[in-house]
Every structure is written in structure tokens, then in C-alpha cells.
Length: 155
Image (cartoon, rainbow, N blue to C red; front, side, top):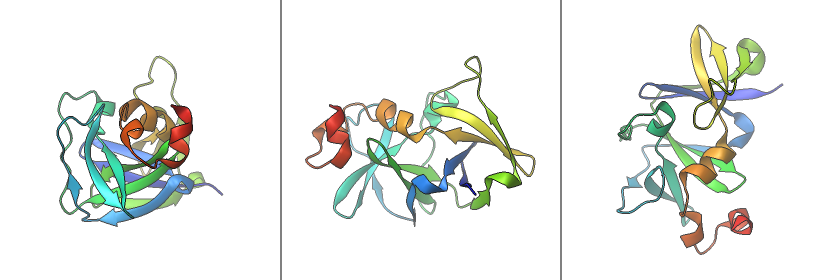
């Protein structure tokens, strides 16, 4: 039985496979640094490693960044290219896939990093393609890190 983590960040409702979620941090400190590449809004330090915090406003096509909530969640997600963090409001839940309705996104409807929709209790969540987001949104971030694990092999 597949499970999904359902989260909200401002106007964006999104879903992530539970198997990709490493941990969920609450109130962790993130740092906005100058000249961060792509759609990386900040970085946080977890186990002595820098983790890019992705700007999910890019998915909505908004010009500005979504606010990083000081008391919100930071969801650390494992991608093929390394760990990334996603900001989320303090509303999150884990549900079984069978409790909602899944649909795939057609090419015409597809936006940055969304591979489908999950409808749960009349709320529509964008299913995120974490591997796509990690490589597209962090362009240039991993190559500057001394130890990026599996990400290094893709340079």
C-alpha cells in the first residue's frame, strides 16, 4: 500500500511519496544567501550538510518566492541527485493512496515538476516529481558542494 505525504505551502497543495521523505523538521533555521542558483530560496544545515530549500512558488508560476514560515515544516526529501528541502505550512498528513483519487497530468496541463494530481477530501494536491525538481531547480548548487553523494556522478 503506497502512502503519500500531503502538505500545503501558501497557495500550493502538494503530495510526496512517503518513501522519498527522509524527515520532517519543525522550526528549523534556514539561511537566505546571496547568489543562490535556480529556484533555491535558502539553505539549511542538517547533519553537517547544506540542504537547498526549493522555492515552490516556481511551480505556481509566481514571480516572487513563497514565504518561508518561521514555525513551519521543512520536509527533507531524497532525490536521485541528493537531499532537498521543501517548505510547508503546519498542516500536513499522511494518507494511503486508496483514500483518494489519482490522475496523471497531460502534457498540455503539465507545469514545472508536477506529474499528477491526488484528490483527497475534495482538496486537490499536486504530485511532485522530486528528481526533476532537484535537478532543474538547484542548477549549479550541487557542483559547489564538497560531498554530495550520488549527485556528483551526474556532473
